[in-house]
Length: 158
Image 1 (spheres, helix red, strand yellow):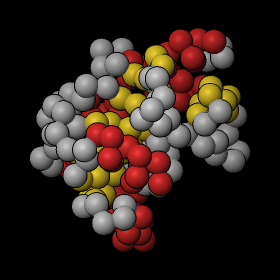
Image 2: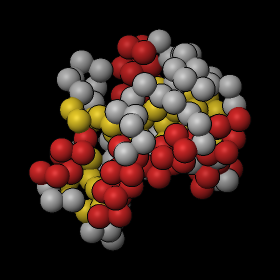
Image 3: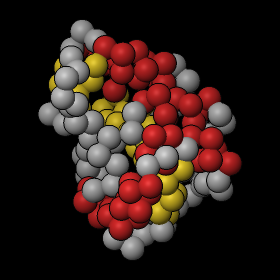
């Protein structure tokens, strides 16, 4: 399953994804990949509506791995652990892009960039993900220059 674009974004589907990224990457299908979201009937109904007509699936990690992915598919995970499980399961994206990760109330987080909040546990998960050898970058918008993600964690002491 090479060729799919993987983005970590806890907001899942929103304007940046449905407009800027899908156009730039030629995305023909979105896959939201998270076990909890896939188990939530309301989210399974609402997320495809947010995709503005783009075919959208809401899958567990296991279902994402068995679905046909490849060029033209953008997989959006809610957190780094989901992305790690995909790669551990055999997915081979060219890159994993850390997009928007909004802070969650009640968690001790550090703002790594103006749009990415990271807890200590998530920092460990990002490092584990980077250790797979798949490039881990952050690139908020397609016109932005991608930045290696682990050095950003290092600079923040995570």
